Image 1 (cartoon, rainbow, N blue to C red):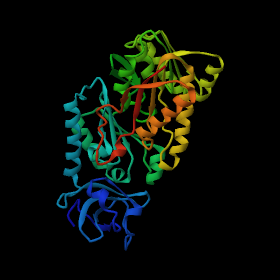
Image 2 (image 1 turned 90 degrees about the horizontal axis):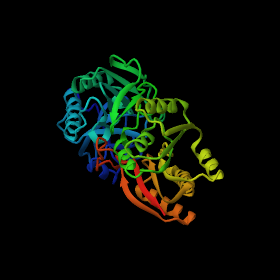
Image 3 (image 1 turned 90 degrees about the vertical axis):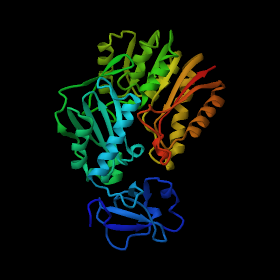
Image 4 (image 1 turned 180 degrees about the vertical axis):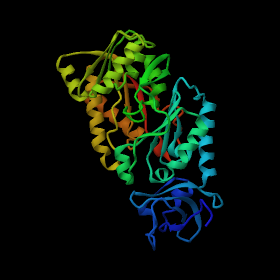
Length: 400
């Protein structure tokens, strides 16, 4: 068998092949006829329809609900070193075209399904790459892909990170740490929207920082002039510091439950000489209730909570949490206040989120005017064949 070609064939059930002709890369176990013989995890497999006709080629994982991740729809294209390198080079060309090749800044340089590399996310922070490995297919090829990343992006070092929930669902055992080159000896400093931020690549959330919100932080800052701002789930202070500087806010209070995150936020405030920001440790839900009890009022509130759901089965529960959060935020806002409200839960759609805001408006008796609907920055492109790549919602609203 030639390298990169299939060692086994899997067949779809009747009337289950349509999404894969449309190039959706996830083949769930429910779409497949059970294999007649065992297939080794990490093996290359061909996907055929129920008539035995080739659809696509991918990589098998019996431990995941996503049994096969598809990578090519060309029967003659092997999943060999040339294939993987071509995908990385294509991703690099896109970021260069978009202007994301500034080594003093940070950007997502590989975005999983959107770059045809299902299960691999790579963020660049200055001279360092952080790779998030989210599939067994990528884990089995890590020793090949890491040197390719080094050749294509020319970093000083490459670190590998895993997300616990995703690793468990994929049956992965990923060892976090340095995979190539040298590790930074402390925070890596990046430029964003005219400010400097220190990023902890070894222990920060996600790959170290929330790069998907870069353009949203700038957009939100435009509404903050002269306002008293409450930034909830503030992490390392991105929204807070932009509001206080470029936005011209009068006062900013940032709240987060992680003291480690707040230490970074305070260090970033000091780094940029920002004095009109105060960071407070606390559970954001409880803090909001306490502020309401104290009859505090704000002219602008930012809500950027963590993911509330990982499956469609728990969307209703997540929407109740979003409703509670936004309802209290509206109660804390002065008339004609600004609400910047976000959701990074991919299973919560834009329509879901808008309906939730409609419910908040009805419950509070306030009019909520959506001024701007936003998503992730352009270095997180949306793949129309895999709409799950659109996950971030950021609504900038006026509350009358």
